[in-house]
Amino acid sequence: MKHFPIFVALEGRRVVLSGGGEAALAKLRLLLKTEAKLTVFAPEPAKEIADWDAQGRLRLVRRSMEPGDATCAVLFYAADEDDAEDARTSAIARADGAMVNIVDNLGDSEFITPAIVDRDPVTVAIGTEGAAPVLARAIKADLEARLPATLGPLARIGKAFRKAVEVLPMGRKRRDFWADFYFNAGPRAMDQGGEDAVQDTLPALLDKHERVQERDGHVAFVGAGPGDPELLTLKARKALDEADVVIHDRLVAPEILELARREAVLVNVGKEGFGPSTSQTDINTQIIEHASQGAQVVRLKGGDPTVFGRLDEEIEAVMEAGISWHVVPGITAASAAVASLGQSMTKRGRNSSVRLVTGHDMKGFAEQEWASLARPGEVAAVYMGKKSARFIQGRLLMYGADRATPVSIIENASRPDQRIVPATLAGLVNDLETAEINGPALMLIGLAPRAAEAALTDIQQEFA
Ligand code: SAH
Image 1 (spheres, rainbow, N blue to C red):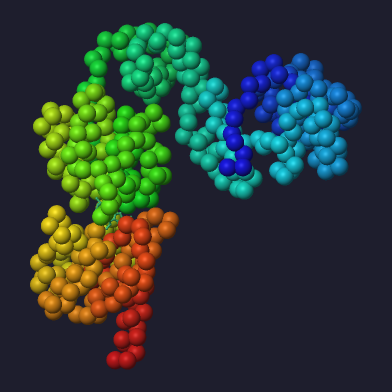
Image 2 (image 1 turned 90 degrees about the horizontal axis):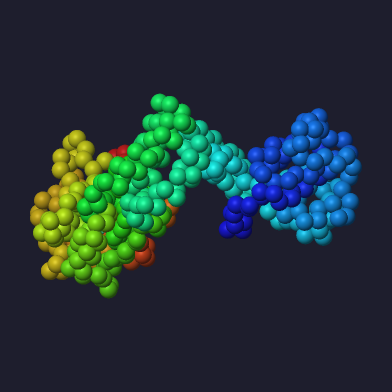
């Protein structure tokens, strides 16, 4: 981050701008929204600037800037659209102690003006450090569409009521009140009767919240998907939004944890495949402790919580403690891995069932129904299979699988660093070793990337 976003208090402070043309107008339109004391230096100002001066909204000085003109100014804008003049005026302003912005000159500016979504007092500032103004505009348009125009008045009315809400204990109760106001009662009252209705609704709403019982703790077992935050379900996002505590695995990507409510406590109970880990009993204890204290707990698991996630043990512990719970399914790693190959899990004429298998279980390498897995056309997704590749290869060959059976290894499926290593059963162990896989990886037995498969069919036809 080369530029740190801050909101500068401008009420009653001096802001100076040099320039009287289009660039100056664009900046002044923004600055006039603030409560700063604006001074504009321009020998030939646009008519609007003269009008604003006449209305007392700024002070216009009809000459070029001179040393001392920016004394006591916090901010200075060089907006003459002339490199030499901008350099001259900004040198004066710098000497006078102001922070300088030169319009359309990122390199020589000490601060830059973001794209702004204005729902005063709610203000969203969007910056790309000059890298992608198009992107900033697109994000702005998106937010403009999403944030109702009534958000500003709601926030203003809410702010004036903050003191009264202090009768509620800090923490969840107060947050519940405000969530109810901003997302439920407030917009409804605004629709029905405007700002007056919003004012009227507040005391009743506060009364209601003073009377409600403390919410009971609850545990949501939530699937975080394979890594790409866009593969989270809307329900998962909602649960993260409401969470007091998020207890997550090592597999859950940081981008996804970012989506948790800002005040949420994040607890990493990461289980390393073969390394140190928090024991299952410890995890159960932590879940129950938090929920018993009334917390909304999200137990966030990579992929789908129902797939190789020891979900049942956690549910049983939670039930035994008398705590309510529910499961939010997620996209399992196999779905993401298969999608990355451009293949399907099942296919008419090839396989009518698919198996999710684990490379190891509590006793070591996991035994499977090898005879059926070794049949041509079978598809299996092997989770946690990195260490057991040699064992799986040996068993399948022993049960008569074709040495040329395709096996695809997908590392970091759905993530920016996703890697696909196409192999065959015969070459599996070697290919895994040379590929140096460090991230979570899945083996898809019986599937090759569609492109590679098509190329292979062409060659076979050529030699037929
Ligand atoms: N509940 C998870 C699986 C947990 S077991 C799910 O539904 O996906 C952990 C194993 O999942 C890892 O060892 C790896 O084999 C697989 N895995 C999880 N995320 C993955 C990803 N993004 N890419 C490839 N494999 C992944």
